[in-house]
Length: 337
Ligand code: PHE
Image (cartoon, rainbow, N blue to C red; front, side, top):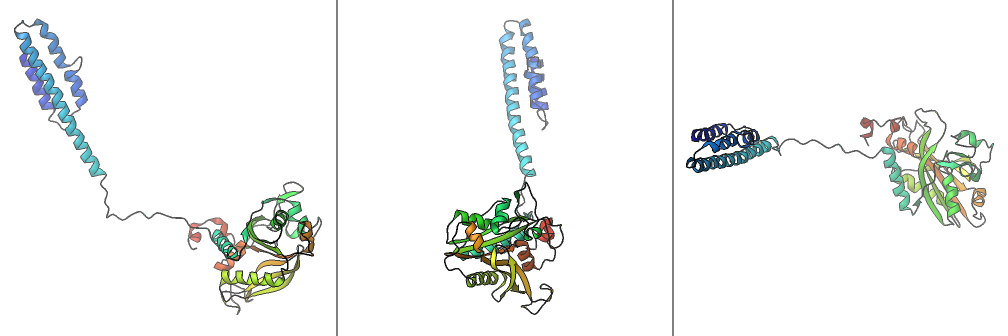
């Protein structure tokens, strides 16, 4: 029996020399309920009274030896595993890094924010209006009654007979004047919709920026000064503006406004198509009917309004010849701005 115990000790010693020995299996095999040491102890009953305490002591020593050896080995294995883990996870701080791709603002958003800055600098507030609008605000209050031919050029998407997707940002003029008494000095950017087929210069959805100023004594001179400063900030300090007579039902007089070509300075080039001038917006003095529709007395107050296409200004500024590029979201295109 002593010999058996000695053998067990030696076996365990040998087994523990393997570095990857499974310690749990080993523990069960020798110390478990049906383990080898236990079975030796079970046989103790057959020993004589003198031998029993001696063998018992030896068995305890062997148990203690195995327990201790397993604990030591477990510690060793743990250290080894940590070492391997550190080796594997070693970070080479001199290795070249992975560049993080950071997105950019879309050119339309960039230009729109430039516009905000310019007008905020002149004391304008920014307001918003709904894209789903009443016929009343989009047309009627703007002096475009039913059957007015101006409706044809802005044929839009109707939701019901009197609710539609706004075809211009001008309805926000009416909403602003209903809400706020003069002095009013606001811009209103946003999406507008027209039932146009997509081509290089048209899209059923695009963006406009509306401007409105109403106060006592506002004149066309104020409109000119405001737009001139805007054009110079947007396209460069040498930029000139030109007013051409036009017609909008909600302004009187009305004008289309051109800027001198910022590429050729007015001589004529590819960007201005040889004209020397580029049309950028519509504007005029707020029609007295529109003021009255909003409860503002045209005998006391006057105002000007303008509206420009943000796509158009963006395309001019960057010399783009196809509007579709702005909506395709091709990063090779967008990365250029
Ligand atoms: N709403 C007009 C358009 O979409 C532009 C405009 C705005 C003209 C304000 C005059 C005054 O064409």
